[in-house]
Image 1 (cartoon, rainbow, N blue to C red):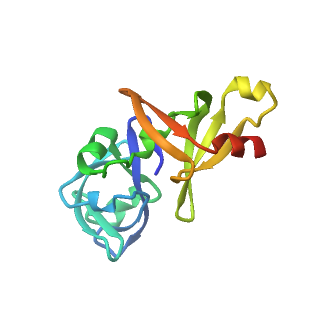
Image 2 (spheres, helix red, strand yellow):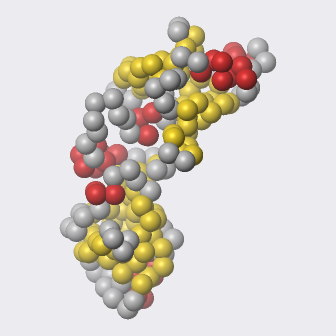
Length: 180
């Protein structure tokens, strides 16, 4: 799942299917259940309302775009919702976080600041934090970046330091950095 300012890409739209404005939809979200009829999303710069969604066939149609010609303007575009909508529609279990909360989080091992989460990449079924290493460590000869598996073995705790800032406390992250 990628984000652009205050919006989250939840799906990408593919080719039109048939003559009635249906399109292929490719979910980018861990919460595909947020796509339901009558819900409003942003697609490009245009607000759209889901008229019909078939998750089994990965088909979607928007109100007012009930023809192949009208729907074709969305081919290749992303279906997005705001961060506020995401928080409202997606309910996380305790100890789980949205990617947009983790990106830019500060990474620590013991009391040492290692760097900041620059991005998250899913490889197989494991999420990896792309860490931009703190400048002071880079000056000491460490790599500018490294990947840290987002698993319990390495992640000890995540705390919300302020309204928009999280801190991640790790074990073994510095070993990965040293090996990078």
